[in-house]
Image (tube, rainbow, N blue to C red; front, side, top):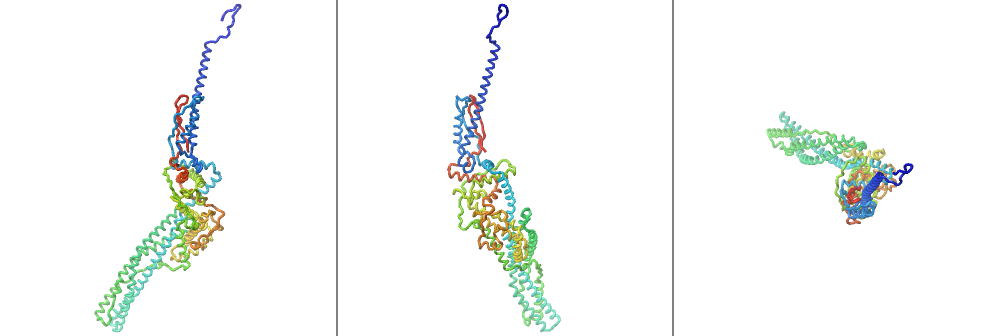
Length: 639
C-alpha cells in the first residue's frame, strides 16, 4: 500500500496467502468426498451385481418341474453357475464409473429338497397355493378337517365292531353245542341214577326178605327183578363211554372260546375310551353278556371233571351179572348181594346242575336263515374290496412305484394349529397336481397318484384297494349315524334281533344283536355308495331318507342280487372324499410321496433328472474387486 499526494490510496487485485490455503483445503475435501462416494458406489455396485447374479443363477430352475408341479428347483449347478458368471461379466469394465471385477462364483451350504423332512417342498407348494385359494375356500376346508377328525374314532369303532360279529356268533354256536352235548350227558347220568335207585331198592327188598323169611317165591321174584335191572344198566354202559369223549373235547373247545371271550372283553374296554362311539348304540347289554358268558363257561369248565369222575365210578356197572336164583345157595346169594350193594353205594350219581345254564330252544327257521345270510354277508364284505366296489371286468392299473426317497426327520416343532392349516393347503395342492382313479394321469409308474399319497403302497392295485377300503369305513360310519338316529330303521331290525337272540340261546341281548345288524346294514349301504363314487357319481356325506338306497330286506340278499344303485346328482364326488382321507396322512409323508411321483414323471422326460440332488436352498459366495480392493459377498437364496 503506497502513499499518494494529498492522502492514502488503494491497490486492487491482490490475493492473500490465507485465502489460497482455504481454497486448497476446500478442493481437497471435495476430491476426497468424491473419491469416497465413488468407492462406496463401487462396493454397492458390487453388491447389486452380486444379487442380480444370484437371482439369475436361481432363475435357471428346472422348467419341467415348474410346469408340472409349480416348484422352483435348481437341478443343473453348472448351468446355474454359468448364468451367474455371464450376468457378472455384464457388470465388469474398467471404463465404468464404478469399476468392479469378479474372480469367482461358488455355491456353498447347499440344501436339497429331501433334507429336513421335505420342508422345502412343503414351503414351495403351500406358498404357491396360498396366493391362489380364496379365503372362503380355506374356511370351508377348515370345517372339513374337523369332520375328518371326528370320523377317525367312529371308523375305527365300526371296524372293531364288524370284526366282532362273526366271533360272537361262532362262540355262541360252540357254547350251545357244548351245552347241548353236556345236557345229553347229564340226562344219561340221570337215567343211570334212576336205574341205580331201582336196583338199590330191589336189593334192599331182597335183603329184607332173606332176613325175614318172606318166602321163596317173594325172594326169587326180588332176585330176578335185580337181575333185570343189572342187564338194563349194562345196556346203558356204552352210552356212558361218551362222557370221557366229551371231557376230552371240552378242554380244546373251551380254550378257543376263551380266546373269543378275551377279544370281546378287549372290545368292551376299548369302548369306554371312545366317547363318540359309546353314545351311538345301546351297548349296555355287553357288560351283562360278559357276566352271563363267564358263568356259562365256569359251569362248562367244572362239569367235565365231574362227569369224568362219575364215568369212572360207573364204568364197572356194565359187568354186573347176577346168577340165576336156583344156581346159588343162600350163603352165595348173601355174598353176591353184599358186593352188589357195596358197588351200588359207591356208584351213586350226585351231580346237580342248574337248568338255567343250559340252552333254551327259541327262534324260528326263518331266524336261522337270516343268521346264515348275515354270516355270508360278513364273509362277503371281507372279500377283496376291489371285487366289491368296481364293476366286473373293470381294468385296474398294475403300475408299480420305481422311485423311493430316503426320509429324514423334520427339525423344529411347528405349532399344531399352524401344522393343521398347512396340511389343509397342501391337501388342495395334492388334489390339483396329482391324478386319481377317476382322472388318471400319464401311463408312467403309478397311475393312481392321489391314492398313493394316502396309502403309500408299492403298486396301484394295493393303493386303490386301501383307499376304497377306507372309503367303505368312512361311508359305513356316516351311514351308521343315520341308522341310529332313524326310528324306522331301528324298528325294522328289532324283531329280527329278538329272533336271532332266541336262536342263539337267549344269552346275547337283542340290543346287542341290533347293533350288529345296523353295522352290517350301514356297511352294505356303504358298498353301494363306494361303487357309485368309483363310477363318477356323487354321494352325500350325511344321508337322508331320499338318498338311502338299501333296504334291510335287500341287505340279506345283497350277495346274490348285486348292488342297488341310483345315479347320484347331489353330494360329494370321489375327489372330495379323497380330500378327507388326505388330511390324516402326516404332512411330511405326503410331501415325500409327492416328490417320489415327481421323480418318476420328470425322469420319464429327462433321464438325468434326480430329485434327491436338486437344490432348494444355497449360499452363493462371490469374490472380486471393487475400486481395486478385494471384497466378498455371501447371499442365501431359496425356500
